[in-house]
Image (cartoon, rainbow, N blue to C red):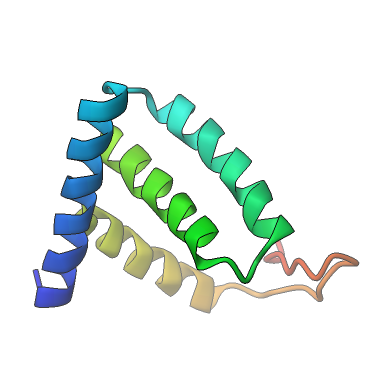
Length: 102
């Protein structure tokens, strides 16, 4: 792991330790449901970096709860980006969402 990945792993570990001590172990479903609520707050105020941080905290906590560490996530993101680069993409819809062509 690079030093940057080490920092992210330490952050994920810190999040996991804090949340387990403060709120209990929790579940992936509970953390993702909470993340969906926090995403609504980002939509309401996309300039608030703390709302973004809330989402990252919940996402990394949920991944940890699912047994994924930062190395797992990094590898999965690299693999997914390789897949995305090979895909064909359609035009944006009325909301600006671009989906791959199936």
